[in-house]
Amino acid sequence: MRCRKCGEKAAINMRQHKLALCAPHFLEWIPEQTERFIEKYHMFTSKEKILVAVSGGKNSLSLWDVLNRLGYNADGLYIGLGIDGGIAYSAKSQHLAESFAEAHGLHLLVHDVTQHEGASMPAAARLTQRGRGKPCSLCGVTKRHIMNSTALEGKYDVLATGHNLDDEAAILFGNTLNWSVGYLARQAPVLPASEDGLVRKAKPFCRLYERETAAYALLRGIEYIYEECPHAEGSTSIYHKELLNRMEADRPGVKLSFYLAFLRAKEMGTFAEGARSELNALRTCPRCGQPTTVPGLCTFCRTWESIRERQAGHDRND
Ligand code: AMP
Ligand code: FES
Ligand code: ZN
Ligand code: ZN
Image (cartoon, rainbow, N blue to C red; front, side, top):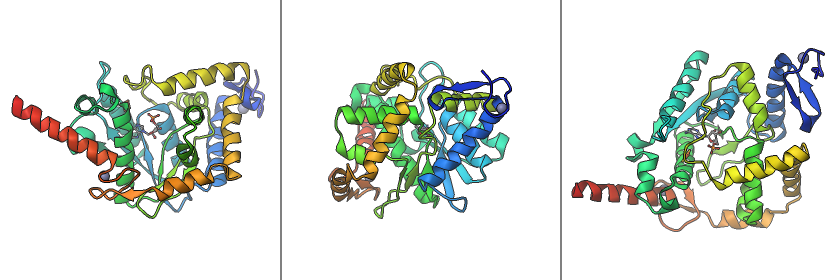
């Protein structure tokens, strides 16, 4: 296989694009594509302040690298979840995020959940009923809350995450299976800020395959954590990704067309009613001031309050 641009030996063949590229041309192609998506979906401009949520994985570190190379003004945010799982998952990923920041002269904010919220994610999950001890759903709520509050406090214009096409297609697949119209209405490459305190959110890699972001990290020499979160094993989203990959193997491009056809359907207003009713249902949490769909305290504040109460109970019993 030869590079389409220079005829040298190709480093990657992307069947879904009918495009093979050598390493140097692939390393140019990824930032070009990213820039194109940033502009197409009006994600942000080079004058704006960007906060990239960096997990230490291939997607978010590659995204930070690409935004930096494209000349965007992007700081990083690492959220320490206190997950060990026998592989020092959080410690290792934090180290990789910090090393990347240092090597590139970039600014990384670190928010440690054990320090700020009072318990590591696994310890907190054991203290709640949510997910029957699995930390993933509490972890999702907590990460979203911290990303939003950190972006607001630091006066960032936009929060960027490393979600790639495989993530987006799997989320879309799950939402479609359940016909979660509200979630479908809010799934987009960019979500505008809301007046009631949600910062703008952008996913500049939403049209790149995971295979492409992984190849970018490898060819660029970015050191990232290879392991998935140890709690992710057996999750529905991984199952959906596997199903989609099986389809992709038979029909290259099916993941991309599934996602792009959804975006086109949305442009035609297919989910407009769902979006309106979602927005109308938003209230403000009396504790943290962030918008929420539930009455009273938001899920973040309610759950962490009960975790602290149970923790205090445990301490008294000790
Ligand atoms: P995930 O939910 O693990 O698939 O991650 C999706 C995106 O959320 C990543 O690409 C990151 O941008 C962000 N993210 C996940 N975990 C963290 C973390 N611990 N700290 C900061 N950002 C994170
Ligand atoms: Fe949060 Fe796995 S439980 S990343
Ligand atoms: Zn080439
Ligand atoms: Zn709250």
